[in-house]
Length: 105
Image (tube, rainbow, N blue to C red; front, side):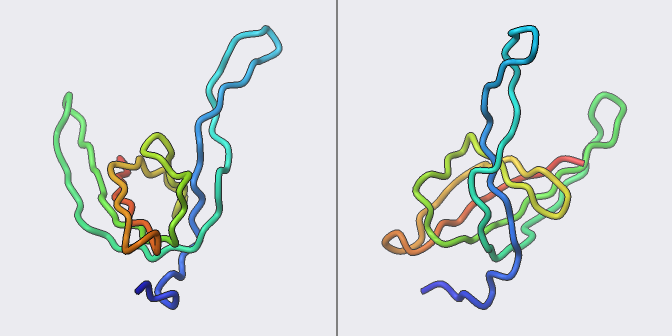
């Protein structure tokens, strides 16, 4: 059973959409798919040196009420950062959804 009291962070699930600019060129942009309350738990942080640059990555677990339309192609906007969805796992029988996501700094 989900603990609704722990879902105290408002997150925005965004979906990539194709639009056309004034010149008729197709461009990709992100639009809000859903705004949901979530329990956010930091899982780990990782820092590495890539191409002579420090690259930091944070991993977090987002638990939301079940939403069948969320896919791994979506992303999460939370805490002024964009989190790439790595995996989705159903909790119970469509009771909730556990989303593992990563952000690079």
